Image (tube, rainbow, N blue to C red; front, side):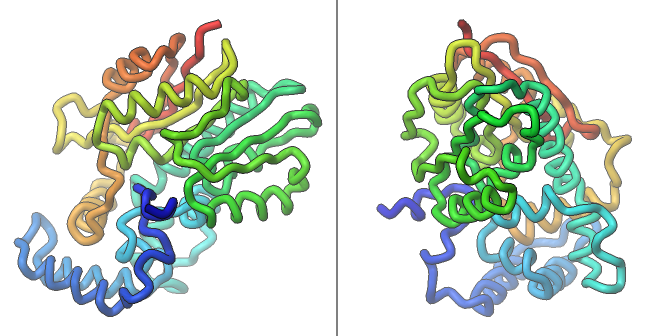
Length: 310
């Protein structure tokens, strides 16, 4: 099996060269037509969303991959609200970038990661990101007072590593950066990191034991007293009575569109939801202590900071 075949967040760009966009579109439409009406979205309205997704680049990627790669994750989290003008792009593209609750929560989560890591910066630290993607969570920080901080990125996707290397060059951080291609569950950083950030794996992994095993790998990668900064998706109210979502912080219209778009039309693979209590229990089982949650406004995509015992 090639490394790219083990990607769980998206399909490798090179793994399906014969699968055309037209085939993807027709397959999606056939699946939807064999389904049923949803509240607020008839079958034909669902089918129409396929064509609307086909009208912009991110939409085409989501149709084909059912998840986000490093490039599109970086684009979404670093997007400046107000950049796209309504009417200048398709209405669906505008709503995905500007209004979709999951996208807004993801962008806020990215800001929380950067805030939490920036606050922990000291000279001489080793910061790691797994999977690193384009590594914006670390490469976009301010290292003015920490010239000797080292940065380590690990990702299974070679395109992500290439993107991280390019961003490091743009930021003048090439000399501080070390990159490695590896599966997060198989990596071995040998207690190298003072702080390790991780976003985007556990939300694609439904197996709780695999998530605990992943957290144990993160524990092994940290020095004694080192800290993990990670995140998780919480279940929506329709799926769990224990949902922590703050519905006053969510547009109900945007949420309804998001449900049809991501759950029904795209069949997004990022559907491994966990509560705060489940996440705490998993981190504790992995050996972490001093677990602190930092919620986004809607409590959809919380950040959690945990420490490896000394």
